Figure 1 (cartoon, rainbow, N blue to C red):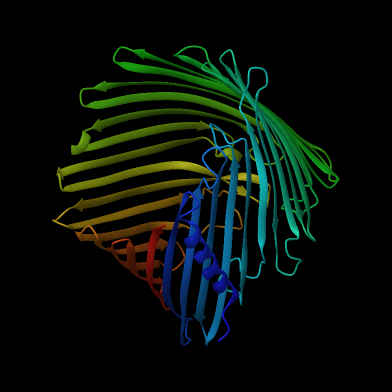
Figure 2: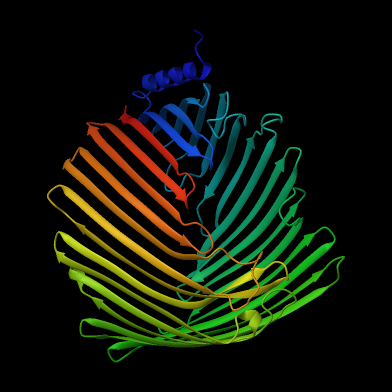
Length: 580
């Protein structure tokens, strides 16, 4: 029987690493792993016969990594690694497939002192086989190589980092290594009178053989100190490669800054300008934002004020005509919190108004007034509780949800009965409005939802046993109020109930057994109910540095009276790390 080339390569490289590790002033680490998995699927179409499909998988892998100073501590630091995998698979009607993957990476850094001034690196992979089992199988080899320069700041010159690399990859049906990506990144940095400055320039090119190119370049300036942080960005991308939306070019410039005037006051500002082109059509966007936060202690509590404003403008030109849009928004909020014995109480109130003169989307002006009350009990290890209630009053046109009153309530609790047992519970009520997009009319539509949800869980310890259980239930009601919806009426979920029970057993440190059973029942409106059941069992056993694990999983799904589908799988893994 002829030996496979990749298996011969694996043995040769492993032997070379074993022979050279002792004299290379470094160490070799690695990992050996074997996996086996079998899966069975049982399905049946309504009124038809049952269909059973089965598959099996065997994976063998070896990985090695070397790191050391082969020429002494003042010359170079070397790191290199490799991974070798082989897969055999059997599935459906006697079909069989196999595949192999070899990957490597290497790095050489000269003069390893405080910072390595020069570093060269490379990496790549090669896959072969009959395909179907490995994601990389059939794609061909890939390769990456490059280098970096790192010079620390001096008395006159700033610090400099320079990184250049090229990667090549392959796609089925094309010449190997025909796709090319190149990257160049240059960064200058220094600190002057407490101000930290960093300027980064980046250029990328991406060539896809037979498809097109993407060229991008960008410039980033970071300026910071203990009292402020400012970021300025500029970028441009040009494409001949087809992308979703047909965009062939886009340019963007933005700036953001945060000023910390005092321990109690901070302000934030941001500005963005962008332009995109697609064929003979162009679109432009400009927007600005400003906000502040003021925080100060008041008695035993703390008072916080915050607010902000934003404005934006859009313009589009194309064969279909020109379009314009303007929007603005203003918001403010006040909050106060303080401890009350074992409790922590807080209240907050806010107001926000926004308007949009838009040709598409949520046109009109809306105003939101909201208030929130919160009460928490921090019981430490013995337990905790938290209750929140939010009331929202909205004044808006129908296209933005209309005038409405929303309620949002939530209750959470945790109680430790003893050091070995804990209970958790949640209860939530939500009455609100979501905005969805009606693609048939090019506008937003509102969906009024009311939902009640809750959960109850318990966990304890009985010797080396750790059982746990949890039950969740959510009930939802959707009031459409005659609003338009995408593609007609939605499929509504009336209620969801799920249950989960688990058990962990650790009779000794080297042996562990974990089991879990779960189920979910979903009730739909005008559609058959959904039922899902699942179970899993996992065993882990450590024998010195060898770890063995065995896992079994099963799942059953059914909708209404249709035949159920069933899937089960078993998986075994043996792995052992080593050092030389």
